[in-house]
Amino acid sequence: MHNDTMEPKTKNLKEVEDIISKAIKKVNGRKENDLCKYLPMTSGGYMHHFTLKKMKTKQPSELGTLIEKFIINMDRPGAVAPKQRAARGSRKRRDQLTFTRAQLERMLNIARVAGDKEMISVLSPKKSLASCKRELIASIRHGKVEQELWNAYAEVIQAQALIASFANDNK
Image 1 (tube, one colour):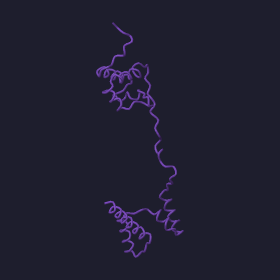
Image 2: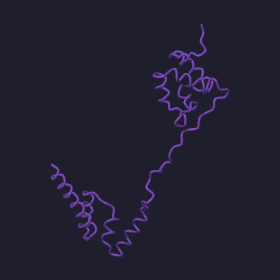
Image 3: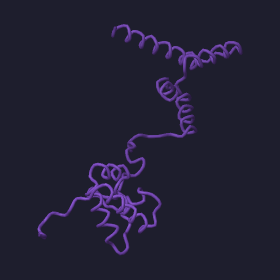
């Protein structure tokens, strides 16, 4: 007795392997992953190769049905367009100003001419303690007094002291 209202038979792994190999030949592919771009997803785009591997082991019957529907039963299987993604750099902050090195130097010179100490400290590149010490010792050897260099050294020392005090308070 044959019943037409029966559900479609489930495919075992061997049958799915045969379907996959037929589909690979049909799309002139070399490996299973070549089938992914012909299998559309409900979320948009084509199937990810991890999803294909997962379905092969966990849901072979559904995978076989998808491959038959979109590759084997089609006269000319068409590649699915990739899922639309956000453009690179789309998360960058638009309200943030970015200056080139030359522009920063010009701004720093303007602040120096204006004698604006706060702007000078904000625009000056932050140096490590070691580089501050090195430059300060070199300026002393050459007999030069550089107030900005001394200020940078003092800032680094104060910052380290502040960090150390926070560390001690949190113990």
